[in-house]
Image (cartoon, rainbow, N blue to C red; front, side, top):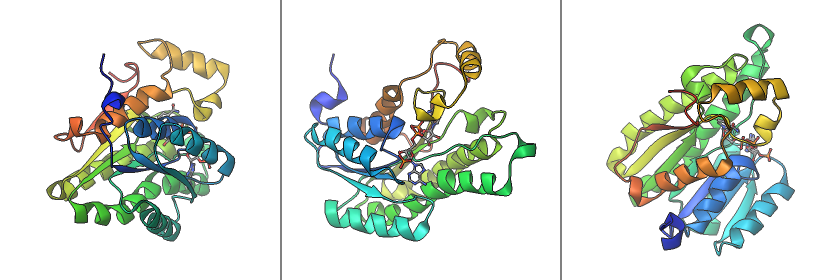
Amino acid sequence: MLYLDDIKILKDKVAVVTGASRGIGKAIAISLARCGADIAIINRGNAQNSEQTVEEIKQCGAKAKAYQCDVSDFNKTSETVAKILEDFSTIDILVNNAGITIDKLVLAMTEEDFAKVLDVNLKGAFNMIRHICPIMAKKRYGKIINISSVSGIMGNVGQANYAASKAGLIGLSKTVAKEYASRNIKCNAIAPGFIKTDMTDQLNANVKEQVINAIPMKKMGETQDVANLAVFLASPYSDYITGEVIKVDGGLFI
Ligand code: NAP
């Protein structure tokens, strides 16, 4: 079998992946690197984790550098994009993956809980797109991938803020796809179901069992399941696909 990474299909491309210090973002960053792309990773705080990701990317033969930046901060994202441009000269691929949860029922959710999740998950993606789209538009090339969630499609008890942010990402993706199609920038969203990461480790055993029972494939997904789709959407194999939302959920939402 021929894998996309065997033919270095992303050779000479530069990818920015947010939230790549661990979990899904880390798997995406390493998978893009295996396909030949150089990688700038962004995370909020934990430099130890991000340096570990950088080392693993370098082992794939790619150039890699980590940047600490809170994606919800418009000015900081602007400065970080400028630094990435200095270090890598261009940006071809943007993966907006950084995300958080603050799960509570609506009646217990504070204004801050709601605003914080929207700020990181939705405004964070807008900030990155706002600063990177002009670079892509100028070179008439770009692939943007926003990591949404099935929660944004079907809603989820205890996740009013998270589901709203992830539904918002779908609207953002479709709009960017329409606005920038003429500049050869494609923008798609991935909607993972339940994937094994620190985020889902927080769920208690009962909730996990209920979740797995609700999934037709009867198991949680691996980070690599999401990364495989991200590689496809970043590659020329998906060049006529834009404005799509593709689920990676073991059939959870059919
Ligand atoms: P995770 O393991 O909790 O990792 C989150 C990543 O986002 C970390 O690298 C973290 O950086 C970074 N991050 C958080 N807030 C940030 C901020 N303000 N600025 C910059 N970086 C920030 O999460 P995950 O499970 O891999 O999820 C990744 C994405 O997939 C999220 O958008 C999530 O909503 C989405 N998703 C996940 C699942 C799932 O089942 N896991 C399902 C659907 C969708 P630090 O290390 O510095 O904190």
